[in-house]
Amino acid sequence: MPVLQIHDEGFTLDGQPLRIISGGLHYFRVHPGHWADRLRKARLMGLNTVETYVPWNLHQPRPDEFRLDAGLDLPAFLDLAAAEGLHVLLRPGPYICAEWEGGGLPSWLLADPDILLRSQDPRYLAAVEDFFERLLTPLRRHLSTNGGPVLAVQVENEFGAYDGDTAHLAHLAATLRRCGVDVPLFTCDQPGDVVRGALPGTLATANFGSRSAQGLATLRAHQSTGPLMSTEFWIGWFDRWGGHHVVRDPAQAAEELDTVLATGASVNLYMFHGGTSFGFTNGANDKHTYRPTVTSYDYDAPLDEAGDPTEKYEAFRQVIAKYAPVPAEPVPARAPKIGPLTVELTSCAPLFANLPALGEAVRAERPLTMEQLGQDFGFVLYETVLPAAGPVLLEAETVRDRAQVFVDGQPVGVLERERHERAIAFTAPRAGAVLSLLVENQGRVNYGPGIHDRKGLLGRVLLDGAEAAGWTSRPLPLSSLDALPFAEDAGTQVGPAFHRGTVRLAEAGDTFVHLPGWTKGNVWVNGFHLGRYWSRGPQRSLFVPGPVLRPGANEITVLELHAAHRARTVELREHADLGPTEE
Image 1 (cartoon, rainbow, N blue to C red):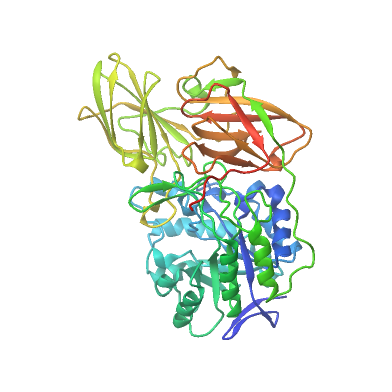
Image 2: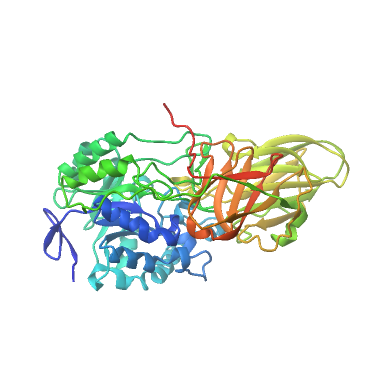
């Protein structure tokens, strides 16, 4: 059976020299109906390997629940990769970063108020060991030592940028071995962190997107023999709300790739195909200011968000052909898309009028965090009663991440973590008026010490300087909208509301939902949660995978958190709009 071997001069597979030419392809960011297509296009570009992270928080949403089904059927993805003749680099974390919610760490870990993530904390280690056992037992047949496609497995992820505790990496490596991983292990770090993040006896690799020769030289200075490899060769970047759409010149990226391959190094393009952070799964960064990541993970990759080849696809294919065989088949054509179509959303379900259908309120003296409520994603509605009429100063110690404030259902303002806002003044119309704060988890921080990112209202909430007591905290995960009773739209809605319409299609296919005139919220198609939209931009469309549509009637549901425009329409178009790029 072909087994990857690491020698002083490089890799061999089944005794033959191997240069790994790989591309990132996260199965959990691609509809499973598209997996085979994306893998085929990886092979046609000249890749011999694909790389994927594993999102712990989706596979184990609760400590006693584990999933390997539907869009999380990693064994099926690995079987498809093998059928396409591709090897796989597996990166199971437990921490993955990936601009993914919480870096992949499940939110239930944070229910313990003083747990230390990515450390030797026994509570964290026990959870990791349980996860690895559940994940890796069914994956053993997919290891190359058992005839499968998985050549190598990564230990943690860019640990040198977070800590330098070699004992923690050694513990994780030992756990992988104990769970049956008998293929080579490797670490990855940015060049300046390689020394802190390396594990003796394990292959170190480097992450960079420019100054490639310098990055490889730094890696070689640390590791005098063995293969040189860039596990994350950054060929694009991700976008954040309020920023611009980041792009990278294809010719410049191809030139940099040529530099890497000319040294004889192996490479993994990050990303080959980025896909989409569907639903509430986007992450965030917090370097003194909280910055949530957009829904699209297009990443300006060789395959765009819809899986169509870009200019980079052909440019990279030509570079790869200088160093390895590339299939003679032509570059795949752009897949046809549905549109343009205008869809009227004719029925409505106001959020405040339908709270019992969405979540059950929990009473406590103080607001409860999402983690205390056993909630991963979505919103929490906090409510208390105002004691008197008149002016009120509301101060919230910590808002994570965005609170819409209402009095008797009327909006009075917004508090945003991103803007460091903590106080708002309003007038209570009467004694006994209901104060409501609808708090959105906009994505847990996925990088740096901020990963201990609990959500909701944290700490004290003050009304005119006195702590408010007697709260209800209602989790609104929005994991299903089936119980919502929709009625004919009666016109102007005050406060958040779900709007629904139907579009009839002759056949299914990929498309993009555009929401001109809408402000902020989420979109579902036939119950499939596409993700968030926000007029703040840069992203102005949401990708709809063809497999979630069907011939005949299709339901589109929009949760608008502020005010829906008068027309109550959305548009299906053939092209994405990811926003303006920086000149």
